[in-house]
Length: 354
Image (cartoon, rainbow, N blue to C red; front, side, top):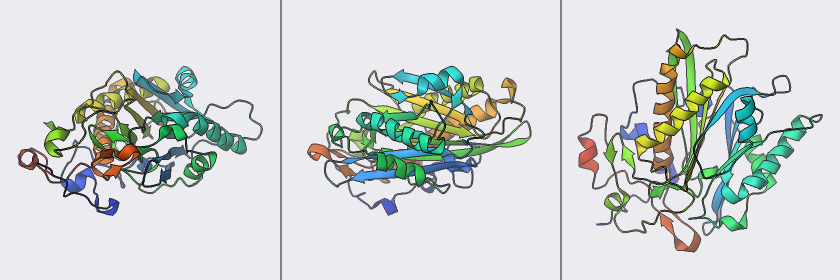
């Protein structure tokens, strides 16, 4: 049976919480977004010709990076290294984020890195060395990735247009052509606020979803062949996921590495297969002022919870906000329907239903 009556415009798609899907007990930030971390901005540049090009750029821009403060404590965790995260080895070695984070398509990552270098050089005219950080996922299932349509202007537009509002989600920017768990996916974001040792702290997450597995919503598997019915179930090659975690909690690179690992763990909650061809990376950084005392390890558990819950919700948002897309060679990936054959199962769950 085909359940494709959910063809709706992007403006009619809603986030997980609007469907009664509440992940965890911690409160969200004001926007439930990575931009709830003060000074963290997000910008997109989207390329979509309605046919064989569905790709783009997403930039995460911490405004705390200035000439006076050229680096932020940061760490990267590689869940599976079948991917490209340009600049990651130096960031891992030094524990410092020195540039905005740019996400794009696999074969456009190198042009994006050069464009990010242009951006950095313009802001630091005396600099002789830079470490642009660019990640990617492979959107070649829906987009003609070999055309490499991302230009310097697309990257600069995403960086210069970054703002602190609620970012667009789903089929936008670096998520325009991505797929996950058998459905159309894209960009998603979420946040959590909490007290750590009596001090307010915020964790924000942004994801670029493009990985395989079986969609699982709060413990309920939703196999695409049961939810959608008739479609091509072949899993695209090069599946990957990029996760960016921002926080204002005072942490060093070692502790941020522990956060990044939890971000990769959280992919399992939504049914990730962690396949051999998947490049699964998490980047974690803090915007906390450097003079603040570091949180001890025995106080970090609430932040672990915040990261895992925010990543889970951001991944769900990346799917629920995406729209059905037909791309290269007529291939189609359908959006997750809000009603379908599993609705009674979800309705009997503990925290809401579609």
